[in-house]
Image (tube, rainbow, N blue to C red; front, side):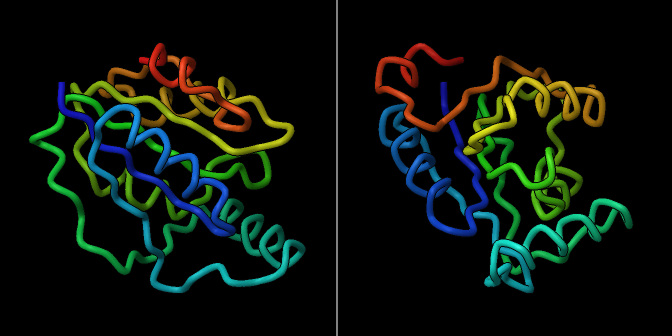
Length: 148
């Protein structure tokens, strides 16, 4: 089964998790790149994220969309901002056709459980075949191998 790991990372934590997952799963790796990078303090990031959530904004991307047709599984990683996925991740998900694809999320959050986010994404993208999410904080190689 061919796998693609797509991730967004502001501080490098999710990048490190995505690289580890891609290595273990022998997957290709794509970084979600916003047109306007979120290179700001934690407080400003929270404020910006809240504004994007309230406005249902879809920040522009500074990347070419990956050709997902050649992949059987799509693993999507991101930090949790204000209890949800950063809106730039939703920009990418809106642009991709995940209908019928097997997909799962992995998150890097100290407090929000990835299951809550997986439920939100399943409702927003019902044609995708969503699988069990993974909390990538402190994940072991065995957990990654057993996941999805």
